Amino acid sequence: MAKRSTHQQKIIKNYYDNKEAISLQRAQELCTELYLTEGKKRQQNWKQISGHLEKLGVAKTTIDHLIAEDKPELVANLLKKLM
Image (cartoon, one colour):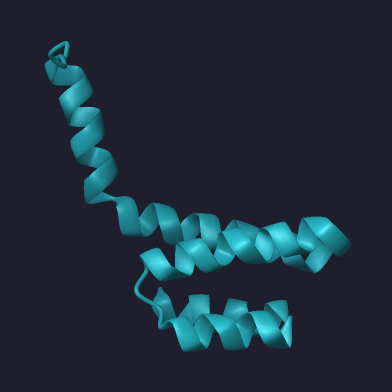
């Protein structure tokens, strides 16, 4: 395996240092998309949001409840609390 340059190592380190912030930002973007989408795309967005919420440490029961309710407002309120 090839060695990484110091520049590449810094990029990787910064990613893992900011992993939570990246997941939170992406979940916020997907929450916005939930307001605008319908059908199959909406289901894909819910799946992606659930993955990001799991990375942020949200309980599986809470995520399942949000998906069952299918209300973006609930996700927005949760994300506001996580900030």
